[in-house]
Length: 421
Ligand SMILES: *Cc1c(COP(=O)(O)O)cnc(C)c1O
Image (cartoon, rainbow, N blue to C red; front, top):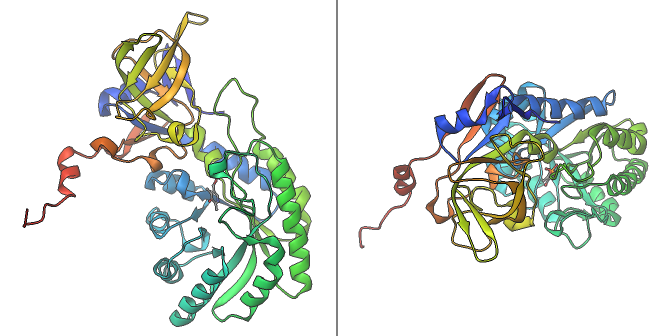
């Protein structure tokens, strides 16, 4: 459920008409709903209660400071994958004790940043990283709390670019080698083993792969404890999928996911961490765009929008589907016609949808891409020298610009021409 609904013939974000925001800030823009973000976060905390737990929002899915402040103020932790995301989480007011640091390529610089700034744990993904972290922590006279990310060799049955839990993926250490790596971690100075981490992929639409992975983690917990490791925390990753097309069958609910966690690892007495991104932010955001032209091609009609692949790359990068809806409510059961929905960027890949049935649209009309909150704005670029798309946060009947559109002067100022030219 989200808070983007038609009211009086106009698509609203909570109590604000998207057309009013478009009039104020121009198009395209991302718009997020505070109520939806809040609701989705609470679905997870409710699903995991009464287990001791921390829901760590995957910052990479939507990293705007205002969104992090909102979720952080509700009690959320953060899952960061770079020094930049760590800085964002801290700047949003999230204490280090609620931040977990994931990622296969943490630099020594990033380790120092998090160690001195405060960190809940590092999710270590390789032996070289483990040794580097031990050296960095020791040189600072500090101890790094760690989990080791294990790769359970489970097929997440999702898009190949976002599957992470198969042995051919770059993530984690093979679960069979875990005892060896934990033994080394226990011997190293400057690191304190606190638990196990696993994350098998993103946009999972079935619970079964999670079940396989978590059962393996439960077995590993018992095996490592038998060898004397104090496994007290399990980080079970993110990845729960969302419905991108209203017409499709819905992926599992957080409540069912929570029940699965309780069933598989709930009796181990561990504190549970999860790292959902998409399920919290995805359906909490839309991308609003205006039709520049309707171009009648030889065998199809093109809807040319002022949003493009640089603003929302998921369709061209992952063949992703986004529902596209007119901001002015169409007449129920009115006529539809197929459009190829495209942006202005000079690449054929700049296509959002092919032969998509939509109500008749005209130049100047507004459309909204649904489910665009996650991996939308964060993946935007200035390709074709198009300004980064601004972000808006709605709360009930008011909205705020939480990232403004840069001016062209600002964009040009970042370049410099050497004096010898
Ligand atoms: C991307 C990622 C997540 C979040 O995945 P979602 O599908 O957005 O829930 C969580 N943990 C790690 C380690 C990730 O890389």
